[in-house]
Image (cartoon, rainbow, N blue to C red):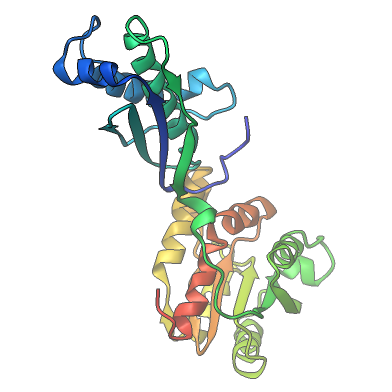
Length: 302
């Protein structure tokens, strides 16, 4: 199975359709209720719902998804029956397979219940109509060229006592997304120097995005949140809450993080933790959605 533990939960929806062709007489029998096996439409709908909930037991590499909604619409025509299955879940991975399995089982169940009176039935293509949720829904910001800065804040790294892994991780991820890192600096945990550098990156360099790493804990020299708070004009508490909430699902130590986020002028600033693992987790859940803030800051709304 694919590891999706680093993904955040989002609303996932999917619709799939299937159809089955049959004789005119078969449709007439279904409409009148004159069939040997109960109600084929009702049973097909129930079977489809059950199938959606059991997709992971049928398809080996599918994740177990806690479904929030499954519905099956049925349209009966002169010589065919059409099924549309809709599935919803707030989860880490999509639900298109659940929708496809539901649509498939609806048609197969209908076939099974009527095969005794119609040997000409044919199941048509099973097709995914739509899927929503996750990164596939994200629209790239209107700004074509995003300029970013990375600020590593650590006494040990600045003095050469420890290798920088977190800053390098941030730069590599931004480059992968096509974001140009025009500034990369390492500073000690010094309030005044951090504050001055942030102001420079925002006001003089005019960067769109600044990500810091380190100095967000409770150590005597951890002053990144205080320095950042002095610089930003508008706070983004939702980003801070999301980072801590996601982190606490992985380690309770995340509750001790004090990173802040906010906007100064046209620059978005986000404090990330210092640990490489925590930085990776933060980047996984913040991007690409965080980039939507850049459109909002340019007045392009939602």
